[in-house]
Length: 321
Image: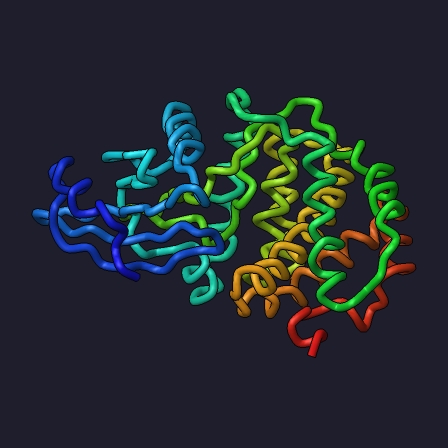
């Protein structure tokens, strides 16, 4: 993790010259470094063009901050170079906090739900719509990457038709800002009070409020107990007045997101050489099958039953050997 060319000059120009310490990256081409300068810490995001563009991150961060949400402050940015200097939220993630202390699960998941309640009450941001075409394109990642990796020949037209039959349930009566990657690894415990800081929101769109709830409660990276999922859904519905139609959307978007993630994790292995991601797929298949068991998803469930047998639902890297 060598700092990007130009990082030193960028930091010097904005009064942040000092030590640059590498941090872990993520599933994208972005890399992160901690900058230590004159007793201060900040985070340097390297979002190198042409693979990355930090402008959406800057736009969403500005909208979130303007509406009272805890996005990191932007100390400096050079969008052309793909360099952004952010407020340092520290190293305390919700993920480790709930993994290490079961007593914190209800409190921290409850706090995460409260952020989504606030998002549902805010005006939708000036972002592109999370429309049916986008949802279809994302769902197709499973048949674009997972099925070919296992040599499964599937009915593509039937897949599209099955999703088309159910995606109407995910049309939002009152669209909201959807952060799209809202889960325990992207929520930071900030300050002595441990309030939740938001990260990885650059792909925000305007869509159904159930989507971020699914991201949180059907987490691809950690097991969320069914009783926690149900309790947090109840908390959200009590705060927002969401009715039964909300639950239909929750399961449709859950199935859509989980199908997408299985495709993305397979792509990260096959295209990008990141073999740890396929190992997460069995958990995601578990969530997907729970959603497919709901009556609202009967057309999609029938397609899966006809095209991908249960023994081929799992870790694509292991199954392809």
